[in-house]
Length: 452
Image (cartoon, rainbow, N blue to C red; front, side, top):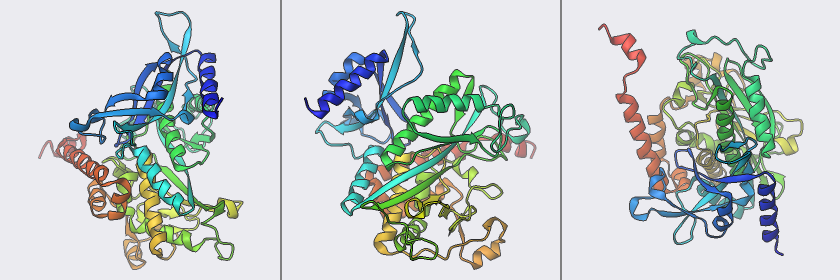
């Protein structure tokens, strides 16, 4: 018996033991929405052999109608059994559902170049040829609102929960614990969770991994959070800023880089423990940050978070520990292994596969071209005047989706990493989104201008 055959037998044994009746075949569209094709478990063995056909022209960014036939091939390593039952009135007892992430293929049997997961894989394969291995960790934040009670502005906020709140002050704790428990049962290694600085905002931290695994886990975390919250009368919201004049949800990204088990970012000879390649990576990220931001902050709403007055970064600068900068080097008890970079601007509306691709491509270009970063800023930038920031060469992050899309259109490094067709699709889709937003009439406008 081959290893593959044994793996299949073990998986089907698990499915039987957990009384799994349905399998969700999962994949992500270009704009970051998780998609699913549901099959009965008895069809799963055949799908493992031949895949399952679908219409790629109905998935955003995948295919045109003339080349719509595509095939999903499950990645068995991603199979997870949902820890909640599926109630079916027509049959006795309770059944379970499992989910497995699949890779889309063309009818010619090649991976789809439009699939965000494949785009990230392709980039990592190129890095691997140079002997480099990336690891990524993220800290997604999200809102937990009671169903039907989502405040529109700060005056409607009734909860008093704050940073590291505890019951009874933390009204979302029970739901957050149930989300974490579900993820742990699914084998997703959550490290910690807590209430954030404002009411309703929560954060999860999970074990870092290779970028594809981290992106896979993040997509499942969002799905599980929404599913569990709904059952408990809450709504999990990953929109960055749903409340006016309120804090927003971020998703800090931590990047590690290894060369044959050696931490490329660490240099014991440097007074600050930072290698030259780490500096070049930072230089590349800063050079391409305007285009990268189109992927890490991809919605109109994202830029309601990136404003002065809150803790989100709004200035293009880096530092060693300073949390007011865009990029920093977090403190670690083990610098030899733990030295890493933290990008603080991304938010949870990002498609993680494309966001990671853009971040890593920018940094790799910095290493390739030996791009030196500007001088590190160790003071609190939030306290600096505009004149002081200008004198020290600190420029602002883009303040609108339109600015970042324009930058993406001009950035050949990021476009090449994503692929020309995916880049063009994103630009067109986001231009339509911007136009729709510009044409909409908001409550603020009615209050401001109704009596002019």
